[in-house]
Image 1 (cartoon, one colour):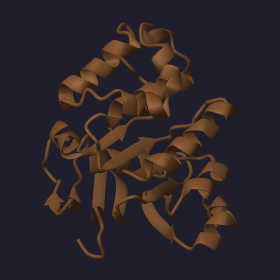
Image 2 (cartoon, helix red, strand yellow; image 1 turned 120 degrees about the vertical axis):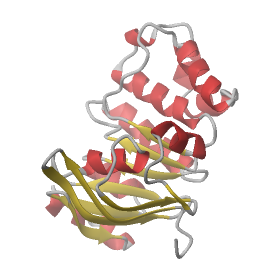
Image 3 (spheres, rainbow, N blue to C red; image 1 turned 30 degrees about the horizontal axis):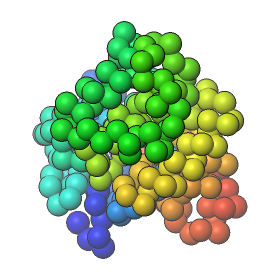
Image 4 (cartoon, rainbow, N blue to C red; image 1 turned 90 degrees about the vertical axis):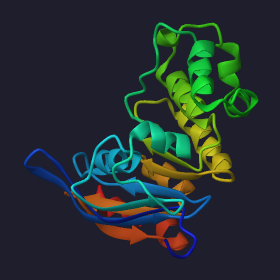
Length: 230
């Protein structure tokens, strides 16, 4: 990797069976950056994150994280290295309490410092003994992000974090993302353009499986130039 990137993707191609979904995708992320990926539904954004996280296997290309090649690695080993994926489905262990969900995250990472979670999400401290199945969508999103923070990840891949959430929760997440970027790089797939423009250091626009634009000029981001790709 060059220029201090913590994560670099080069020439990534991916398919579902005979259907090719990603075409020669290149992107790079530096430590502490907030990078967002925008595009219409079906553009390939989720597929891109899942290939980086090792959940799906690319047909060709390279993915390098902290100077290590991730191609062929199992997703749980990639997570142990400090690169974690938070899916958009907001699925938690519904029959377990918030406390038990966090305990699972701690068991996997050996990180039992839950203060770092409740500092970002004080609401979770009040919900520790509630079954996760009874949480609101916003509370589930907090739990998923909080659980992923255990183990001090270097990169978080977050898929559609604000989808279907109330404006107050979205505003809270915006502030959390800004604070998180002081410790970890974020790669976020997001459709909420005001949020994208407020938090992004760089934006990749995707269309039909290709990255068609890389926007890293601060003034262009503020002007919402990425809107043309939605």
